[in-house]
Amino acid sequence: MSDPVVDKIKTHPKYLELRRKRNGLGVLLTILMLVVYYGYIALIAFDKAFLAQPIGTGVTTVGVPIGMGVIIFTIIITAIYVKRANGEFDQLTKDILKDATK
Image (cartoon, rainbow, N blue to C red; front, side, top):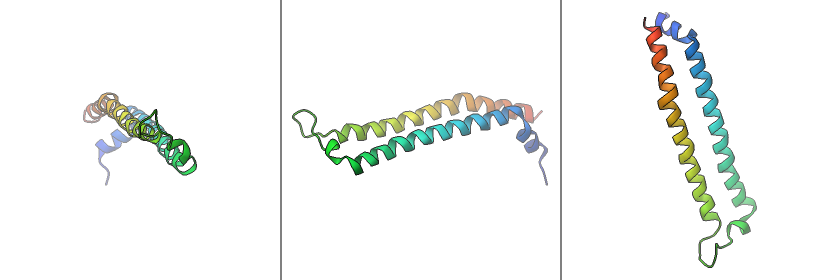
């Protein structure tokens, strides 16, 4: 059994555009996150001496701000995805539904 609305949506040019853009962004952000996260883990594994260097005369080491950078990077790429999803992707979805239910 096939729903005609679903069939219209699957073949709608804006739906195909939405899938392409959303999947492309998802793959890009995933790759960036993996590079940053595993880069930090590799740094921990292979250059502990670098991360253990104190900053200035305090007890904070280089690893702490780099680790915070990983967390902040995660928040930033999440915000980028949410901004695109709430703006461009939601508008495309509304257009698709409007055209499909005519």
